[in-house]
Length: 485
Ligand code: IFM
Image 1 (cartoon, rainbow, N blue to C red):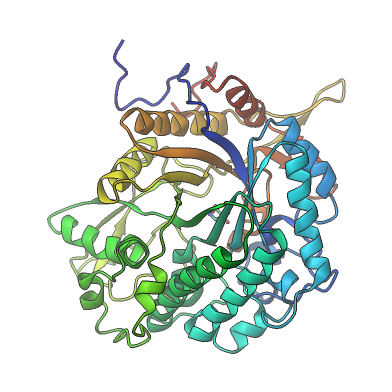
Image 2: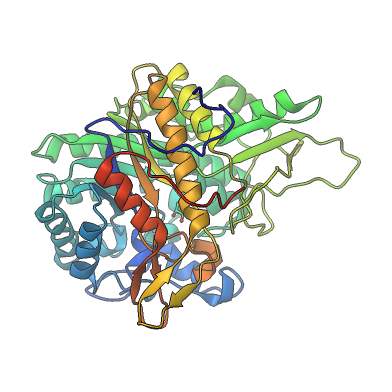
């Protein structure tokens, strides 16, 4: 039977040998131990302690206490059958002020993590930066200052020297869009600045940091790893007469500001033109683009939902809900004429629309734009308001049918992309366990493993069992309920 192209509720699809099934986390979201073993403060420590910035005043001080529960969490990964684990390294654990000699205890933690993964047959995929900039560097200007890119390269060298005999995939940055535009433009993320010009300077210095870090890593690693960066692509749909123009503008800021320099060695001309009223881009120095334009073994793709935009008519109140917390500033410098349109459901607990077709479309689009570039899904997953149930016999369970259904549909989308010839190498479910969801604190649960924040006890959810079955059989298992309708 020919599958209905709009229906992603298939099962029985088999993934090829070598396709990597993993799960992902990030340091600040799970580790806790915020002041232990020489870790310095990061911008997220400062931001989360600032009243009104994070839901409920939550911080990452304890988080999932993964720092102290490393061995048990490694065992959990093994029980779930993970083939790969994507984690991030906390820069302030390695260099407490972002510069200077390495903190041996910080390196030791990640060394034990990597060894523990390898001992269990799990491939280590390390991200160097998942948003926890040492506060001391922010005090000097953070990502708006080009010196931060060079400090990052030094940090990359230190980590590469310590772990560069064992890490299989190095991802330099996670979602630089968030670091730059939410951190310096909208104020929804640390450091909470609201300055469009600063956000664009941060875009460039993050891109530069990536290129410099890959160069450093290549010099010091002793195995043969793959190099990657992870981008959160915006899959855009236009509405109304000016929809196409609105898509072009947001695509330039959200997607091409990164893929341009990273994969083509240039910033898109229309991006420079659209933002000319915000900045003159004089922070791009001669030679920077050649540094940024490093060959990548893998392009990391994070996908959750789609975004619909149109040109604002200037008369009715402008809609600006782009799926991120509104903290006063705009993450879209130079695009004040664009508004964000509410999308059709169903939705996750983040209010993000569920559209697996967007993932397939994105993968096909990337193949067309960058032929020959291997891709890997470094994040996909969903938050839902899960409930822990304790059965009469003491068995604990979380019946998160919606998450399993969400994952099934997105794995089908990935499989269809593979069938269409996309060079897709693997898929990391976000997230291994419930954790600190940035501005939303602990109010949003993305894990396939439930964390009880009173006891820190871990309970694999039904989606984790479903995922384990997928990994074991390499085939998308059936679901008895179509929870998302
Ligand atoms: O939790 C985040 C993660 O840190 C980065 N990508 C998106 C996830 C869900 O919001």
